[in-house]
Image 1 (cartoon, helix red, strand yellow):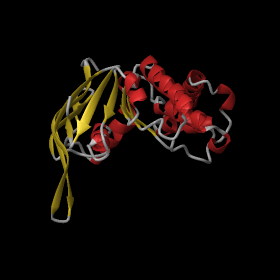
Image 2: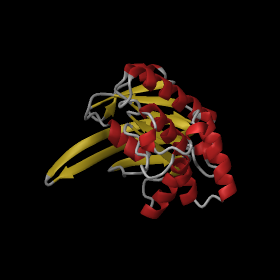
Image 3: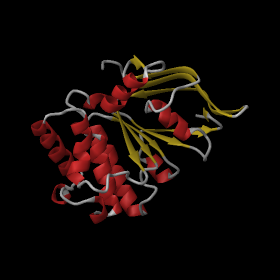
Image 4: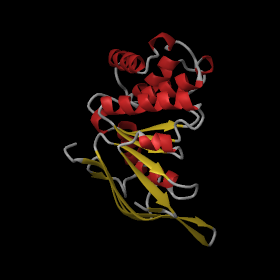
Length: 231
């Protein structure tokens, strides 16, 4: 908790195997991200952006190098240990929202708290707080198909910050093309909500994007090419 860097990748490489063929996705990437920062990752398709996001998100393991999240080396953790890291420290926001269609906006935001065993009173307080921050208090009882694309992404953002008490300051929100399915104006509004809410709740934001306008809203942008950070 005390470390200034919430993400620390040290000489990380990732090689995928396709039969006898080795396909390098990351080549010796080192990256340090300060707690509370908003960071953009840009680069052409196949440059390694999604692989980088998956390693930070504890969804994949490096072939070489070390991944440290909130001061803890997760490189060789067991699957059950990685599950706890994802539950308490990692949240994802996707291009296509990934909301559960049978649940209301309220229930979608509540779900990760329910899974974490947060008591009902505390869950309600947190969900009401987050839906209020994204301006959807009046839409809490609506299902995804009753919401606009921008509203669905706001629900997804609120869900990303729905973590148990005491973990919010170490939450890393990983957003993969979060405005890719939205028009320009709605996308701009959603990005402002994503940045303001993540920072306001004490979290750290990593955004993979092709959109230079999104990049301009970040504290810092890293460009990737051929599995390397090139600046």
